[in-house]
Length: 118
Image (cartoon, rainbow, N blue to C red):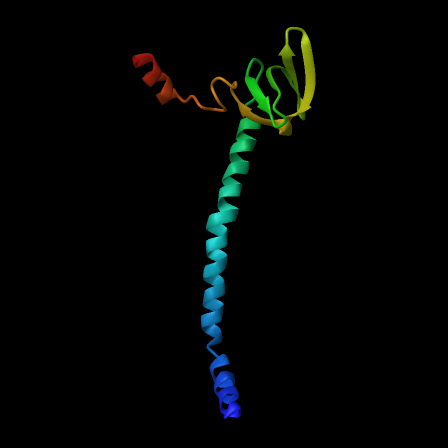
């Protein structure tokens, strides 16, 4: 009796390899759209942010420092964090434009018009 269950279990385990391959393809596609693609978009936006930095922009570093850009080099940025106090940070340490009051990149052209109307 026990042998008949083993025979049935082995017969059902064969399955269709094409179905398994299809499952793996669907799984990889889901992983791409859920994990990889959003991360690539975020990296692209960060590269654009770093490329658009200019003197006078207010920025927030990844460590939480707030400052106004005084000088932009190829790899570093000099921030003025207080009157006469300047620090150098790597460009990659800049996480967002804006101030704490505004929030990082919170204001867009459409938002400014709405605020002016109010």
